[in-house]
Structure formats: C-alpha cells, structure tokens
Image (tube, rainbow, N blue to C red; front, side):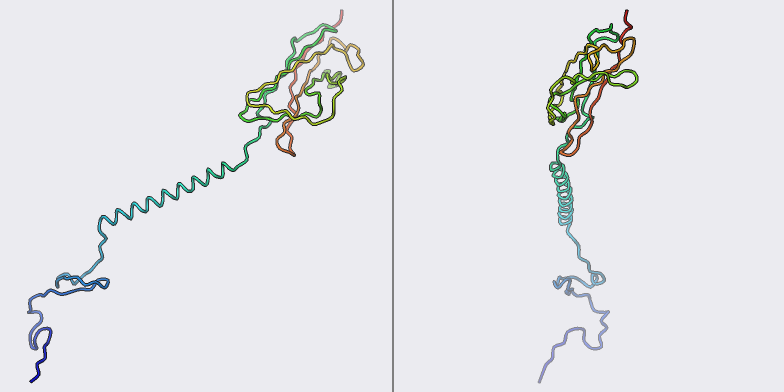
Length: 221
C-alpha cells in the first residue's frame, strides 16, 4: 500500500472556510513570517536612525564642497600679482612763498610729493637732476627752467616712494630769462613743476605728475 501526503485543503473543502495560517513572504530574497492579512502590500521601510545618518552625510558633503570652493578662490587671489602703485596714489603740490614780487626779487618755490596710497610707488625721471620747475608767461611762452644750467646725465632714474613717504624740494628764481636778463615786470607768470612719471610696469609709465601756481611781478618804479 502507498500513502501520499498532500499540502493544502482536502478535496472538496472550501479554502475560504479554513482558518488563516501563518506563512512566509519573500521580500528581497529574505523570508519573514507574516499572516494572511499582510499579504496585500509589502514595503521596505528605512529605520529612522538611518535617515538621520544620510542627512548628516549630505550636509557634510555640501559643506566640504563650499570649503573647497572658498579655498580655491583664496588660492587664486594669493597667486595674483600684487598691485603696483599708480599716479592716483600720489599727491603733488607746488607753492610760491608770495603772490606778488617786486622786480628782481627772488621767487621761492616749495614742492611736496607724497604717497597717499597703500602700496609703494616708483617715480621715474629722465635725467640725474631730478625734479625741476619751469616758468611761463601768460602767453604760454617758457621764460626759464631751473635745470637750465645744470649738467644732467640723460639716464632713467627710479626712486621708490613708500606709503606715507614725502619728498619736499625747494627752488629759487631770480626773475632772469635764459639770457640772464630781467623778465618783463607788471605781468603774471606761472610756475609749473614735475617730479617725474610713475613706473607702472617695465613697459608702461604714467604721467608725468604736474602742479603749478600763478604769481605776479609788480611794475618797476
């Protein structure tokens, strides 16, 4: 005699009349016990602790990216060449000691060159004599130049001027022209001076820097 075991309800038995039995539902290849009432929907839930971990990881990645961008920007700034001083970093003034002079009276002039910027400025001059002052009449004709009788070498001279540093120079003119004769009296004259230009880079020069002042030579007796 042979006996065969069967699983499930016996023939002729209504399955709906059988009591619910425990079973296994495979989710992701792993079986877990459930009951018949849970067979309708099966989902994968992420534990609350894991969510917090992933949020923290995302924040850490974003912060790291921002820090990297800031570091790259600061690196570019640090590698940029330093700004060189220009003509806008200078203040240059010229003053006479009086407004009116008698004929043949000495005209005294003071110039002041100051670096008002925050970087060193390189002053460049075309000869070894440095700054000079010229004198023009009201028609724009030059009548004298303080460097006229000086033996100046025609060389480029570079002079650095640090932030806040000043160079004060003094000049005198006895009212004589290039021939040594007294210039006409009863007229206005203009004194104009320059300390030179500004070396911006090896191939670029700004300026020259200029300042001027007017004065009057009274009529002779």
